[in-house]
Image (cartoon, rainbow, N blue to C red; front, side, top):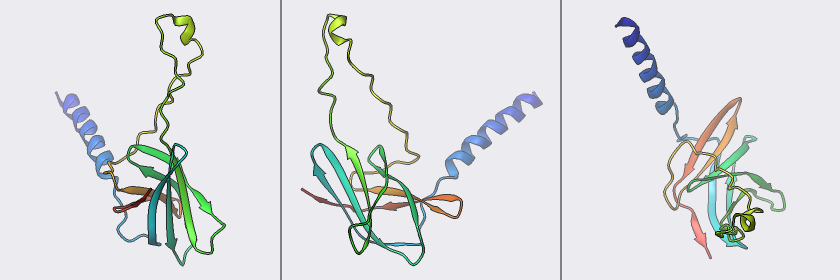
Length: 145
């Protein structure tokens, strides 16, 4: 009985710690000036302009339930990061009762599961501070069509 209680305690502790370990930063080492999203050729592009006295290494951007690598916009005088999210559907998938006609279909690549939930107009970014990965949520992203 003691062994079952100990195992149950360890499992519950692990679940609670993994859920409680995630937290958005409230005071990041940068300030967001603007954040907007546009749609271009089947892709959703998110651009974030920021200022910072420190050198920041941004890693990923999260939008809805998708993840994208961050790119730095070096063409501008201000500091900007960009990410591109695919909006394309799999219209090139062939569905047919004859399996030979479906032979060339490629399997859908599973999405990386994001560690939090985002609403429609929210974007989260991950960045490195020292060796630790931190997360910051931008609650209002302007949509430009």
